Length: 115
Length: 113
Image 1 (cartoon, rainbow over the protein chains, first blue to last red):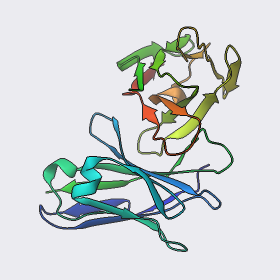
Image 2 (tube, each protein chain N blue to C red):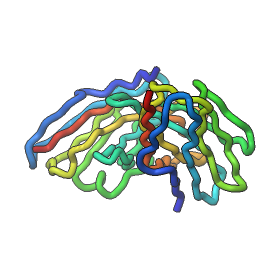
Image 3 (cartoon, each protein chain N blue to C red):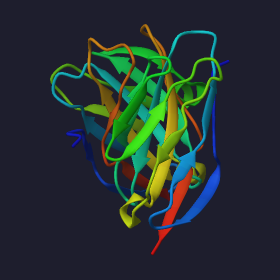
């Protein structure tokens, strides 16, 4: 079973508010991914890290979204000014080193509702 | 660019029947293919993975074979159970760093008694 921890499980924000969610990857996994899963269950990649460094991120992440994975602290994803369209399940996944296939272990997600 | 196409929408079956969920991919590089399963209100979990051509991989009664000649990695099970009702995602990854995996749109499998 995956040991990726995500908090909070549920988050309700008003439009324009900040929304912040956290992820603790599995121990020993240096690669972390953030995805947005929409109401149609489709995955949208947001950003990934190897240790503390960003590997890739999409344009959406570069504008209203910010993310970090500091050393010895949980990773975080923050939406600076929430919009209704941001309502979704935000999934964090981690991947072990030594296997470049990016086999991913997912957390249970943070379900964000923007009113 | 790289892409994954899988059986879309809903697949409904009666318990005990066989199932095959299709997954095809496009890439010019050497692929890793995955199947993930997501039960209602749970995290997606890795079900199968493969990077070896023409080798069958199995887990929990599910199996799939990566066929590079046809760019396919179809998921099969010979006899579905009620507990197999879930979302199934096919995903593609490539060797080397700095690459984001590509997911298919998911297939919802519903198994009836």
